[in-house]
Image (cartoon, rainbow, N blue to C red; front, side, top):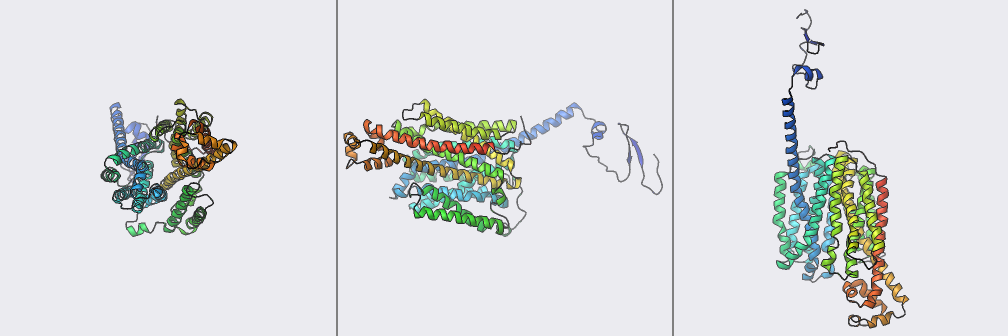
Length: 586
């Protein structure tokens, strides 16, 4: 060793690699462990050390996996409850409204929930960015519990409908927040798998809620059927508080509540709520309760357009932190994904409404029996979501599934148009399996495409919009399907009855018809056919030979609508942009 006066002491050291290195008093005492020389020569590792380190890493991954599974299992409880409650109301709304002597207004028990859910969904994305995922999820559980309690204690149809709207606000967060949290906790290629579990739980809830709720309503009453949910919701809320981490993402640094509240885009929220609610009301009421040219529908349409325009202006020029930024709404991938999921949900809802009615008309099936014919679509939906999640995780590709989803649905609707001719058997009832399969594939693939196509900071807001677009598709499918069915059925009945000179004599000769109609006229036959499915089921064979083909023509018109929509969805799928998932685990 040698030293020089007036300079830093220097030491010449020769390492195992025979490369000289100059070490002075400014040299770090601890060299980086990423230094290849250090790894190869300075520290000697054995195979046992490497195996021990590998075991530690695998154990850590296994522990993290168990933790994520535990968290998601808790979240799925809320998904099941919210979906089961929706089908429970479908099974009991007639009895509830009848108890208040207002059966005609019973549909508001569903409309109020749907409107509140769609209006609330876009808010959860931005609010969870400000206040955190856990707090927003807990608030949604609390709102849902209060709404459920209000339904059980309501003393008028208005009170029950208001409580139902509160349920919708809470139920929106119980579902969409789960997908937002999944994107926080998991890499994108894992999200598809767990999203399929969410889809399964939604399907299970919708399938079980009606039967279980109907049984409870018959035995202990509809009030206790809802009140009994409150302890379950509170237990799920407690589990969320215990198992969900305090933060699954970076939240705002403001410590005061006032600072966080100032970040909320109030004006944007008002105009967005008006635009969504008026649009959905117009879709729900138009063509069914009111003609499309009715002043109420026109006013709702004008309000939707005006509110939407003001919302865009506020988001572009006024809001410091937009509720739903315009750059997300105009993002190519976002528009593509929203369009596909809306079209898929539109066709699926139209199918699910039409199928039971078809079997009631053709096979004289009871309401319970007709519901069983939906099972193939439900099974297909479940299998499609599960298998797609696994394939995306393995290969890191999702565009092919966007295309396959539409192709499966095209096969379904084309087969129904060709095969469901009024003489269908059990095997032809299985054709709707491919329709459910296509929807299940789409839900898994579209969400992954959306999460992988937007910036991380936009994921929560884009996810909430995903659910909103899906719900708009559901409402549009029910409204459009019902309108096309009614219009086509009325036209076909006029054509068939006017084309037969003995239409009146046919009606007179029917065994049951004379007791059902005061006067055997064409208009009354059409009116009864449109209003009462029992009239069609109990009609004589000669009259059914006239009515059933008219119904079949109306069903085919609905299936043609579905075929056209999935054809458009196929185009969106073909032109979707794919960015391969960065991490693929086989």
